[in-house]
Structures are given as C-alpha cells and as structure tokens.
Image 1 (cartoon, chains in turn cyan, orange):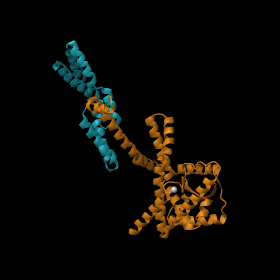
Image 2: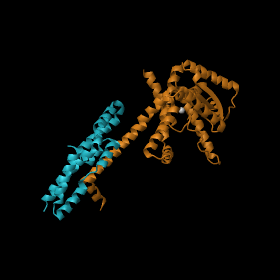
Image 3: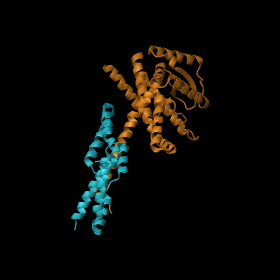
Image 4: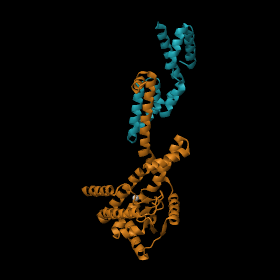
Length: 123
Length: 285
Ligand SMILES: [Zn+2]
C-alpha cells in the first residue's frame, strides 16, 4: 500500500470516528492518544543504536529482544567474526528507517481500527 | 503512588513497558560498545596508526620531549665519563647481540632530583638517572631495566598510548559535542585510573620483552627480578624520606609523554610473578 492509500484510509476512519456519539468520541480520543505512535521517534530509535529499539516502540517485544540479543552477541564476539552479525543487523534494520513513515502509519491505522471497534462495543 | 505501584504500572501499562525495554536495551548495548571500544577497537586503531606513522614524527616528538625535560627537570649527569662509556659499551653489545638496529636507540645519562628512574622516549632515546645507575651496580640488572625500555620503544608503546588517549578524546567530544565537558571528563577519568589500565598492559608487555631477551642473552631472568627488588627497596626508602620531609609535598611532575620504570602500577610483586611465569613457560618448551 502506498502512503496515499494509507492517508485515504485514515480519512475514512476519521469520518467514522466523527460519526460517533459525543461520549464515545471522547472515550475514543482518550484511548487513541495512549496508543498512537510517532514516526519520527520510531526513526530515531532505529538509527540511534540500530539494535531493535524501534521494535520495542511498536510493542514488538520479542522481535526487539531477538534483535538486541543478536547485536550483543555480535559485539561481544566482534573479533571472532561477530562483526558479521552486526553488519547483518544493520542490513536488515536500517532500510526500515526509510520506510518508517509508512510502517508507523500502518501501525496507527490498525490501532485506530481496533480502538474504534472497542469503543463501539462498549456500553 | 508507592514505588511498588510505579513498578507495577511500568510493567502493566504497555506504553511504559515499551519504553522500559527501550531504556534497558539502549543501556546494555551502550555498555558493551564502550567496553569493546576501550579494550579492542581503540587499541587496535592506535596500533595501526602507530605503525603507519613515519619515523620522522617519532623522531621530532621524542627530540622535543627530551629538550623540554632537559630544560625543566634534568641536570647533566654527575657520573664519570668512564662509567658512562662502560655502560654505553655494554648496552651497545647487548643491542648487537639481540640483532637490533643499533642506530635506533641512544642512551642518555641525567641527574634528576626525583631520584631513581628510567625513561623511554619516542625517538628511541633511553634516559637513565644517576640514582638508577648507582642503585643497580650490577651491570646485568641495569641491562634488564634497559631491555624493558627497549621493549617500550620496539612496541611503539608511547605513540600508541598517546593515540589511544587522543582517539578517546576525539570520540568523546563528537558524542558530547562540547570540548570543555570532555576536558572535565578526562580529568575525572584519569583521576579514576583510566590511564593506568593502559600503562599496566604496556608495562607487563615491556617486562615480558625484557625477560625473554634476558633468557636469550644470558640464559637467566634473575637479574631482572633482582633489579625489581632493589628498586622497590630504594623506592620505599625514598618515599619514607619524603614522608619525613616537612616541606610541602612534591606533586608528580613527570610528564605523560614518557614511560617511567618505577610507576606505582602495576605492583612490583605482580611484575616479578609475571616474569617468573615467562621463565617457567620458556623452560617447559
Ligand atoms: Zn616501563
């Protein structure tokens, strides 16, 4: 999906949120504020240490732990070809930096959808 | 909220838990990176650069160090010409016997008010103080000290140490972004003994060189151990005298661009044990 598609989808969701009754709309915005993520923070966490911190930010704890673990093993055994692991982590993780806008927007859309469902189901 | 509640909140609130993982992950990786930089990367880079630098740089840095030491601290030696020539001759024979390039090292004698010491400079100059020569009247013991200094020169220790400190300084200022902060940090770090861990490694390496060369030349490293013991006794007597002295304490005036034989680290006993270990290893072969 392109960035325009994502934006269009977000606009559609925003319309649906606008149609909520006032008390539910207020409740929705409360939940959204907590759950939404910032693409710039994601990008900074990605390139600052390149060791999976950005995965933690989006709640992908297991993937983040794996990433940190591989990075640490690579660093500790640097002189025994550990540097290959570090390069590998860089090669896998750094490209996400350039897609961070899209990744985070996709994440936020899911969050919005789930929150909307949740608020609608509430009494 | 109590601390217990805070901790519970940190774990159960998904957003805060994410940041907990981010913080811990960053800390862990940063610690390992700093440790690796200190123990491997900076030493490796320093060693590489030290090898690549042209001889002229070593020469000019060493020359100017000796000049400033002559201006500020050293006085001409009071040893007789005969004594100086005798030691020089033995030193020259030793260098030739070890198949070393004899043009690389020059022996200098100086009178130094701080007493017993030997220094290696970047240009291959080895300075021994009169008090050192007088303490080690046995020539093989003096040779052991001179071999230790040759070890420093052959292994580029001075240049490597200088480069390590510089790389550390530059890297830190790039991270912190403010030189004055780095300067403060450096003062604190050196007070905490960051430098001494560098010099400890180099001292033991120079000791190893001396011990192996002694074994090769004279089939024994005992004079090296004897020299350590004699210097330690003389050093303690010196310290005692200074403690009794009522005049204000003398701060350490030795510049950092020289290696001293008698630094307080590593302890003499550790150095002796290290040499004994090398002797045992060579015998078991
Ligand atoms: Zn030394």
